[in-house]
Picture 1 (tube, one colour):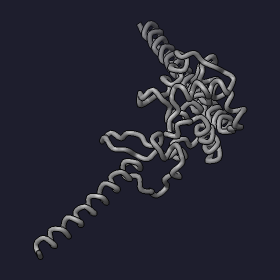
Picture 2 (cartoon, rainbow, N blue to C red):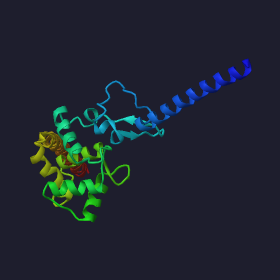
Picture 3 (tube, helix red, strand yellow):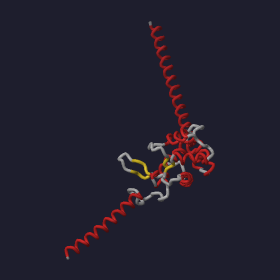
Picture 4 (tube, rainbow, N blue to C red):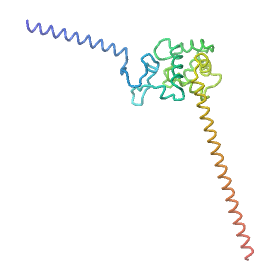
Length: 226
């Protein structure tokens, strides 16, 4: 009897342990690996905190994407405005904007695109080649627009331009000012370098002319000496 009672107790404990393990496994499957809060991590509902918020690392792991750290040309408020726009069209709430969601977005913005046009829009910023837009890739659209790297007749240019009106994202304006100031500084630096090079060339030319005059004078002296 004692052996049977002991076996029964062990069976119950084993069943409880397996139930807890299964429950934990389901919980981890829902939350994803390494889902515990980390210092500086974004709120759970944030696109940057879900699938679109972590990027692959060279070692094959995952690293947390920090919009404020990577997109320093935008203020935190501006980044929140862009995140709000992203979440508005992330109908699946999976941290990505897929082709159909992008189609709806462009229609709502008043710039509908063809199927090929939508695919090209995604392709232009789709760094991980998953055929959809993560939040980071979405921010790249605004960075490229501010830097003047988008064709004016492209869908991404239309997205950045029209969403600036709808969401009042001064981030595009601020980033534009940032890149314009940077470009101006680079232009001024380039002009300064050109002036220095021109002065150096002029000095070099003058030195060469002086050298030639001295050589000619020596030849003239030698001719008189003879």
